[in-house]
Length: 334
Length: 66
Image (cartoon, rainbow over all chains, first blue to last red; front, side, top):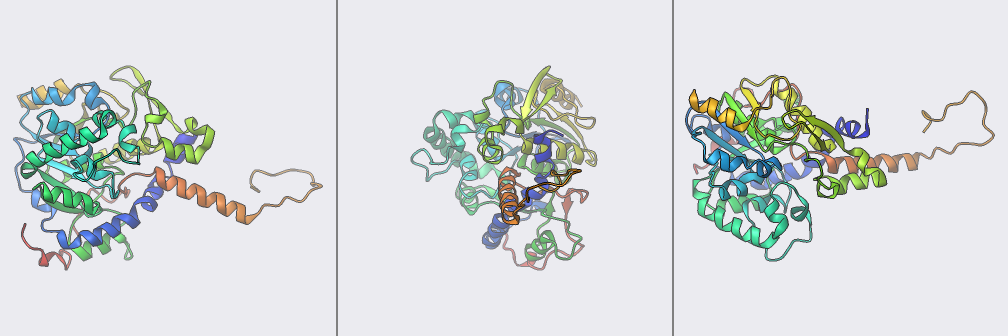
């Protein structure tokens, strides 16, 4: 097994180590602010019919102009977006019915909602490096300012499925923009074990625990089928990887791979074919793990999932790659 | 280290496999791996949504409507 896959095989436990302390601390701080459960969304009709699109923030969202195509289609189903795709959605005139956020990071995630306190480029170069929303890389402060305005304008129309692990800065921002917050607990561990953290959290706040699959994109897909009960789901921007030619320095986990593997950091990347485009894409261990988990979870999902990303590495027996226009035409006809 | 150093002849030198060094490497690896992980956990074979064992958690009743 190559080194990238070896690392990926250890990320289930590593994620717990990375996330649990901050996520639980945030859940404690957020506890008095919980007013509504994600279960309150279950009976509400978002859009028409049983079809939905789940919008993640992978590079194909921009490469394939997916949002403009969605906007100009006759699709009237449910639109669920991850926090990182919110800005791109609003700029394209796509107003998500539900936005999903979960990452407990104290400073980064609030930027996906526009951070009113940002007045100068941050010391952390994450937004200048990341591939998810290129406008932040080109003009960090200007892009943030425009996003603050957009989110403030649309906030009262937006519902956020927010994990108790979310940073209080994200909670403040969503509340101040007038968004409706519906809460859930991330599933941390096996709730059947008496000492389970998931069970403890549920006992404390009464919220359901959602199995997030390692990342917010997969969590958004879980919300869409397990909670909103959508039965035909098209994925957009769910790349879990990088297009050929992407510089390694522009990948999500470049600094971490460099720290772990030193000069051999390039050995940590994994290449996989994209049969839709006939290209070879590459990924890092974390994204590869997300892919493997998604394909595993898709085996048990009571919905048809098709990947309309038109890029990336997420494909399998239960997750075929289909052109976005084909999916939209099919669900609009039905 | 012992798993890599196996021979069928006696060595003239003593191998010093310092436990402290091994611990340091393991600690570094654990720390570095943790930084590579995801933003939310995954729990295998436990379904998508767990609503509890029937009764809502005891703190649910004190929520104020939004």
